[in-house]
Length: 278
Image 1: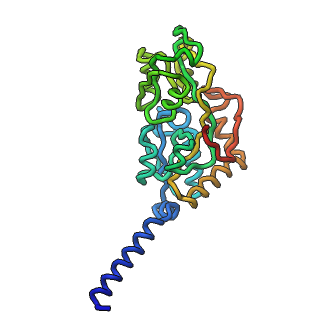
Image 2: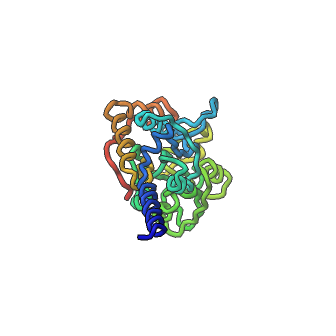
Image 3: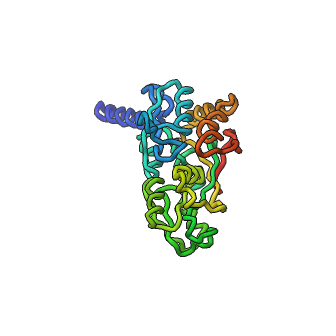
């Protein structure tokens, strides 16, 4: 083989080997090498992740889960605040390593990302003004409701209520403010978030009520880039360790328990399996 052709062949082989190695690069090794785990959170969804008014740092239930995962891997934790609609694109593009961002595990998302063990189970409900006359979901037919852009809330309320008119906002607080301003007759969100926002109203809470019916049951989980099996194993091991050691229940009591604003009497789930919506 002529030298020039041999050099060209070797160059192509080397390029092919490099491309193959790059395509199969292991994210867990990359995280350990850089010494940092970047986790995307919402920062606007108390008590999962929100800004502490005293320290201006993002804290919450999902932040503590992320901290436990980083500790197991042996790296520092870096929190990155994301909009709801930006969560999955930021993960896919490698701008964050994981998502701990009130992310529902459903079949549609399984096509593009992987999920950890279920970290929380909640339902989606509807908040209305007490004097609105709305007593059930059927009364929302043909009416305008507000919710959060890029989450499962909009498709779920459209599925539950025919001909509903949905207006979406970037964050929960923006959507709730829109309800208060009369831009919709109802606010659709995860039950935990609705309870939190309702409790924050203090005496004014009597002006609003949460409808009894769930529009869906939402299993939340940590989002992981597709195909990163070793990283998923570490994430699941960290979460499973919290459950087995009793720390998972302590975290629930810390952020959701009887002494918090939400006052959940007890935890009704365990971090021990993968649950999927629907």
